[in-house]
Length: 113
Length: 112
Image: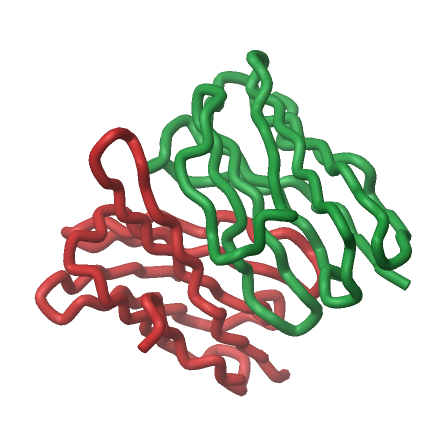
């Protein structure tokens, strides 16, 4: 089993739709969680951090479920410009300032007119 | 504020050669991370440097190595290049490991 798993999709949705992605992680000691967006052949860009209480940024809502070990990203009122690959990243720190950073394989979203 | 900068942008090498990629983090960031992204595949974690020391490395052979300098810039070295090393190599930096990473534009390496 992969340490961080995402459904690769693609998710094909019409403009204006609401779409949700999940990302599951296997290490219960993981501490920090983020969603990134990556456009084709470009570098990933931070979309938002994921906090235990859940957080919202405009049309985007991120949630963390520690009990079930997953994070989610909800996009409301999808725009054509939301078409991209969405990557979750899970960070686990250990003793001696070591750590492990795992990116999911990404979920591809295609928003159609 | 300048972002993460990487050089060169593109590089073409042949099998067996060696390559050095460079990365300058955002000012104030002490952690630098290297990733490999082959065409159509996800990000694969390569190396993490913090305060000049290697903190962790991914599942890559020893011919992938690097270092971090006192000014927190970093180099990634790849020896004995193989065809499957063709990929986009991304560098990211963060203030500390639990903080968001910010990526450079990457170096696109092609092996002929």
